[in-house]
Length: 288
Ligand code: FES
Image (cartoon, rainbow, N blue to C red; front, side, top):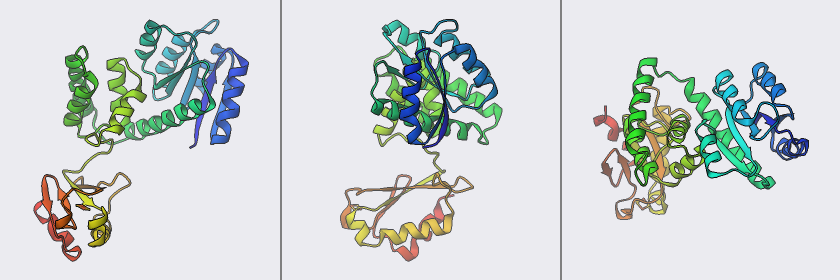
């Protein structure tokens, strides 16, 4: 994965180690052992991620994060902590970071954390550049804040918030996951883990009608592949599997447990069995 990363730590060994581990992974790394210099670098360059220590002489990590949020708010932040107390961690999470790593960390943890953070940052940037109007975005933000405030002190708050947020927005893109993480004071990576674990949650926008094509063994044997090909060829889905007019989205699934009726296509809550691939498009006529 590609991306520009600034590593800030007053310990030169940490900076050089991160650089030597992450460079072969395809990341472009800039290192700084001086947080004042780092702020200038952030001002004059576009980093996807800033990885910063918290305890540093002069400008500490907390202040550095505040500065990053003010100067380049779309930059993802990953924190390196030494001996962080629970209170320290709560304070850090409140600043809206993507993730944190406790020292000492292994090369494997570093690569995994940064790769995941880079994925989230790139998605957040792509969605921020999307077409949502300012008024609509504000309405959704206010509603999402209300949801977070309603549940944040209750047990299992994360699942409840995610469920309500998906009802509100239709899906859970990384920008929404980040918003929820800040509101609940948990790492974005924790929200991401839950969203990616439960099939009920989706990170991709859905059309007004969502098509599920079963590609399990029985359906595959009954030409589910041809159904899929016809849908793709005629509906011109984008890379998020959504049509340009937002009418349809699709996903493939593995066995709906109705193999006797293969091949199966689900549209919204309707199940269509024994679908003839040649009549695939006829199925869509009643969904506007
Ligand atoms: S394989 Fe499609 S329903 Fe079982």
